Length: 312
Image (tube, rainbow, N blue to C red; front, top):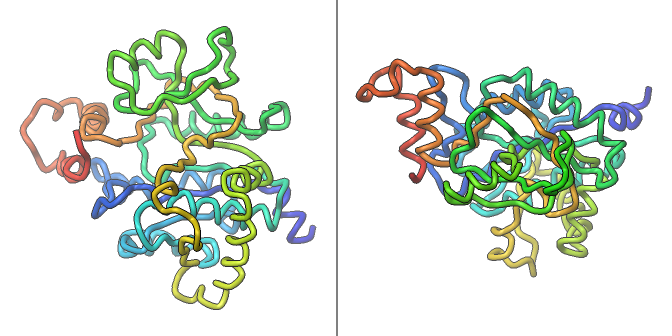
């Protein structure tokens, strides 16, 4: 089997590790109760989806000390490094275009670089199911929506069609961090917590890049080719192309992409984006119920470090 045929048949994964803003150090490089860091957990999820040779990672240059040791198995040309905050959409777009250039018909799974999952087997099964269902989905994009026993804390929500109660639902829109009472209402109406895990084809996601900014795809590909001689420094350094407004760039998100898609319902996965101190406290209580109401202790120090980098 040729290398191109192997790339087309095998899935790809992109771990998005530079969407943390200006936190120093970002929460994803912390651990909970002696576990691996959240970033390392995300890399392990990627390895359950794709071979190591087909994993892309985005990371921030300012956090090289934290992520570089964990990426020993990732090729330098598969590391897309942002030089300043607010470039995550651009680095992710570059990773997607690099995949589409090699294997446009391959399946790509976007994974957040810092989240908590209590039942990894359920998440892995859901991703595999989403990949198997992609050929049946007209939109060619599936986002995983979480439906746990209790509602998500400080999360985004996927809003499915009100008349659809199937496990694979067309989406009407996305609610970004609604207030608790609105979130409760959304859950009652069938909304799902947005896991930020997206499965699609490389060609579909690449077309989305071209739709957002016509001409950007060719500009990024030219930049990737020109950066080839500089990959000895541990990755492909990304710069904002001329004429691309940084203010608008910071508002772009890949979670989930702003294009037609469906949501796959995933039950009892125990997912949390850990985007606020309140969300961290909820996960901390889940991991160690006995220490939830105690003063700060050695056992809780990992989550304490994580909380101090997040706003309430």
